[in-house]
View (cartoon, rainbow, N blue to C red):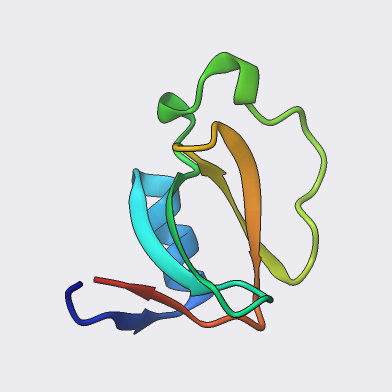
Amino acid sequence: MAKLTPITHQTLGERLRNGAVKFYFRKTNGDLRIALGTKDLTRIPSTGQPKGGNAPVGVTTFYDLEKSAWRSVSHTQEIWID
């Protein structure tokens, strides 16, 4: 695996809005999670489109393109890209 570079949640959110992003974070059980996500509505199927409301506070939400579902990562968790 290539060297991972830390990234802020703010930067991740901006990248997710502009397209698909492969990123990594450590789950609460200690496992390293690799995610391919987006917030770009043109990449999210109609069945996964947001239905309104506000995202939970303290997390970065993303549509997981591999699991076809919305997921989130806590702001207390470090995230990386390669």
